[in-house]
Length: 407
Image 1 (spheres, one colour):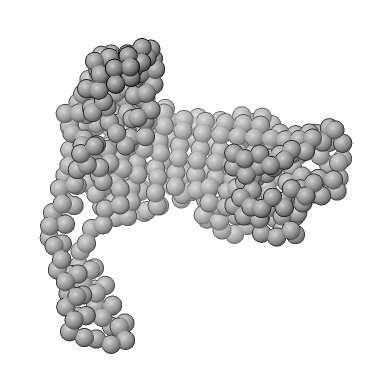
Image 2: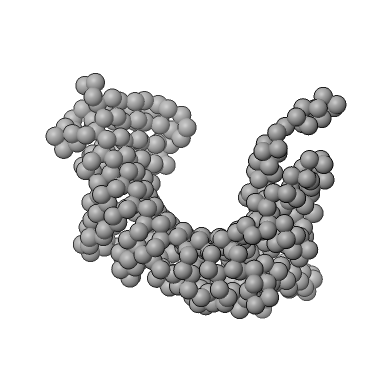
């Protein structure tokens, strides 16, 4: 034990700081319990403002011994972080709120039963009456507790929101019922907010939540769960550098996307819907583009991306692709369906202009390798004159590399 302590005492200060950052970075633990591990931990923590700038409020963790969060701890974060920008996360969790709907559900169950008995009726009634009062009291208490914690990071008249550097909001059904209690706290200035993330399902109530915010002039990173929200967040879209958005319908999405001329990274997730009409969209500074889902609905779209370095495509079949020019391409697919669909997908990939490197990430059998060789050997080399290397991997496991310059 003494040897372990001796080794521990020789750790350089920057290593201890990195250890502390690692254990608190995902928000599952806060700094409090680690202050008393060692005197050096305490001294370094109290003199390192960046360790105090992450505040994560999780409703499901309010009562956990390992992560009890108090207004006093938040006050400490505000104090010891100095003038460092604050990273705020508000996670509503999945908190069911039983109500009158429970009785109607049980009634429907009774009607659907092929036979009834006194025992079954009594069991179902027990479900309705089972300490819901206590549960609802707990839920209400969590609402109030979460509101108190949120008020602490907002500050009187939004004082602390001026220091917010990033804000993540994780609602969950029916978490927005709770969220509605605190929306009025957010209608204050956030001049330094650079990162704004909304995660979870898309709700109509999101509009009210978004409308609570004033103009977000400093936001450069935006993450939205659905394209229906794009254009509604009050920010300057031309100044965005990173956009992550889900796409599930063909509304005004492309119009707002076309305004994001300063993007350097664009991710469009879970693409679905009908094929979009022909459209050209220019991203003069875009360096990384990621598309996932039914990518073929974008086949009529032309992305003008003179600076694009990497293109990531996540989907099992690539039967239609947008027009784009990219140097490096990663195709990630979960399964290998059949020979014909895979060959067709690879042929579509090889039609992308400017391709120099192609990486194929398959979660499937290694029989894919001869198929890749076959498609590469039969390709029209004049259509891909710059292609130099093709890699086949399974996650972190390397399977094969084809060097075209050697052929």
